[in-house]
Length: 481
Image (cartoon, rainbow, N blue to C red; front, side, top):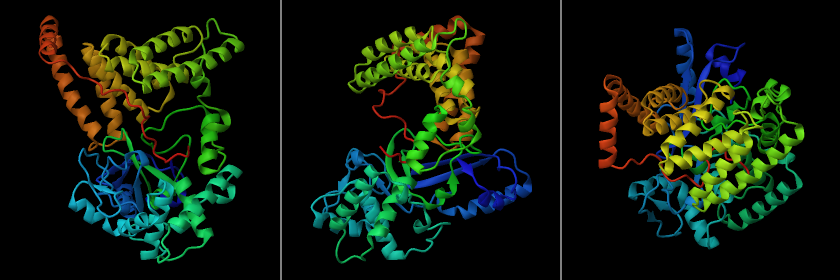
């Protein structure tokens, strides 16, 4: 992501990208928070920054509501439609039987946006798909408040790009189906909008939707429209970082950007393919032939598909077996920075940690981190999460010195990418204190440390990792499938 000149001008730095560490939207109590950390700032620039934050008041500080948001289809019965918290027992709306809430307070807070939706669902007979529901909720708000700027917004929904004119034939067909379904769902007593405007709203959702994650940033729970974040643009070498900005080769990045946002990235990294040699790295001595590399790439793709299938079915020992076989065959061909090797290392270390085979998991985790360190910026969020996992795994494997060092490094990175108040950062701080205490004990009496650790494990079996998730970590932007 990139802060453009129109925003940087506010910060008193018109020529060079302002050194912003982090822009991080996260859903907290149904709100989005934009966290901004400055790398270097004089007193003057800090004053400018406070002014900048006041401009973004709708999404900073205490965190104001999004323009409109919806829970994801697979979670409509499991998360509160107001605060987006997952609850075992939710209260269902007695009228539409669709919306779910924590309690009366959440239901009352949602009523302004749910009132029209409630009657529309009853009239239509069922809840339509997420895009139609989101479009309808946007237009009910427009009906109430008009199309101008709403409180806390720097840009209106009408001013957001829709890129409908760039849709391919398949996308145009999907749009026509959505518009037709929308017109059947939209109540006749509500304000009637033109087909052109309805298409605009669907286009806005398509390329301006942000994924909402839970408080720990580990699961996608919804999608929303946040007009102010539309002012932040993509950059392959950004001056701000986004959580879970997964690395990839330039051609794959360009393909996804073209598909999602309808532009061809011409930055230096994409034009010159910077880092591509590392992402597709191969051994140098002896260097494998192009044919061998091609065959290994295809083998890796096929094996990763098998691994994903076994993981989804909960066959974790099969996952480990496939990963070991894959890594063994990749070893003489791929470098440790190769994206196929890194994906395999990530999966096997996670699953082995879940199976509590910590020694082997720690070995693979260290290899994974070594690869990431060569690929990513020192304050990259993905690197921070990988180092955290590796540190935790080494800690539980009894490698207290390595584990403590990695946990400290992860904590330093996540202070930048997630901020000090994020639950993961707070957990890491507690781990850092605990491992520091254990490390002092280890250095004073190594034998006694291991005896005490063994006794503690015998009294209370260690649970390190949750069951490997069937879903990838949520991306910031709501991607088209």
